Amino acid sequence: RQPFFIDTAARFDIIYIVVFSLYSRFLTPDCGHPLRGLHREYHKKEVRFMLENNPVLDAIRSRRSIRKYPGEPIAEPVRRAILEAGFYAPSAMNRRPFHFVSITDRELMQKLSDLHPYAKMLPQADWAIIVCGDESVSGPFYMDDCAAATQNILLAAHSLGVGAVWCGVDHTERQQSFGELLGLPEHIKAYSLIVLGMPAEEKETLDRVEPDKIHENRW
Image (cartoon, rainbow, N blue to C red; front, side, top):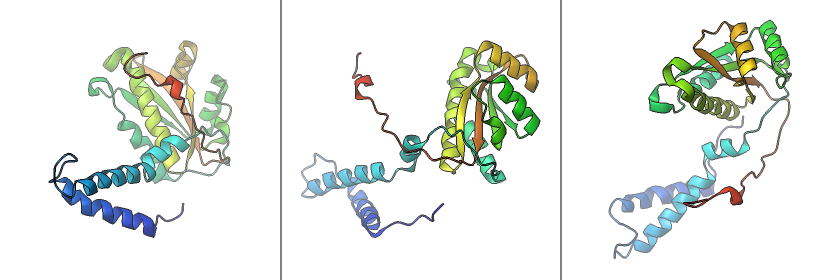
């Protein structure tokens, strides 16, 4: 990764935002103060800066499913950060039913690949995470909570330069097979298999916004 530098234009934007943020404590856009126009301009610049320099939005837009890996190992601190991201996912009533099975055993990775028709890339990857949910804690809502945790892990991996792909497990027969192989208790359900590795492919960012699927107030 290249070191992070702020160019001159960005520095001026930051200074502009900081200076005029002092006025925002005392002025509203509709007040009669002579600085009202500057206050409005400050808000425009602030919004533009946040949209153009937003690593979260950049990660969401540029994340792609990566299925090719060179076999290069993922550093342990990076693994830890990716796993921890899963715990910060929202959950129904904050019950946090998710559990994570970290897979590095090559033989086990091959067996998981044999069980999942869409995980044939797993033996070439460096790592896998099985996101599981405790059905006794959240009932059927564990699936929603595990989906959120899965997305957190995918975004964390992408932000750290690690390729990943989400392979669904919440299929009755597949879920049962995974449970038996991993020795999961009856109330713990495998939800997703995340395959991870240093990427051996690059994919361009796509414009996936479909305006006709945005509905205001009603369908």
